[in-house]
Image (cartoon, rainbow, N blue to C red):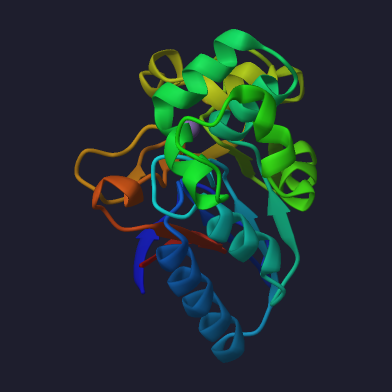
Length: 234
Ligand SMILES: [Mn+2]
């Protein structure tokens, strides 16, 4: 495992794994889970796995990716929502612009993974997507805090207290957050905006774990322990 020096320190005896945007790349997510299981066996500790969201769309197997995400049982897991899950749920709730967006941003591939036709009419989606997948997506959280770390799919709005962040910012923000060198009150662990170099991007106030798995890059897991951050890739 490659280790980086973290600007913050997690309590001794704790470890957090965080996985960025998997976007239907079920094979890579399974490989990464296997690496985490091995790491836990070799270095047992009080660990939590956090999925940073965007499980679905674009890649070949959204359905399988959800099953794998839901099935991890080697330590407690927190699942966060990405904008793609939120957009699909809004479409299922009848929001027409969200349905159009969803089809445009990789929803067709997700429909195929659920055995629906690529152009299946919107009013057939809810019946065609397994109920346990919809329930899982509806249960996703928007952020999670562990010690000095704050986890969210996309980031946070600078100048807004962490406990007052809007779900929309937590799932969708880009420029205002990515350009900010401010201290947000915690070190932010996020994905959402693929790193061009396809390796986790560590800054003073945040780390971006979206290494573009669905665009040919690896899927990355950050391993947070004491004052260091390890990187596992699949
Ligand atoms: Mn996203």
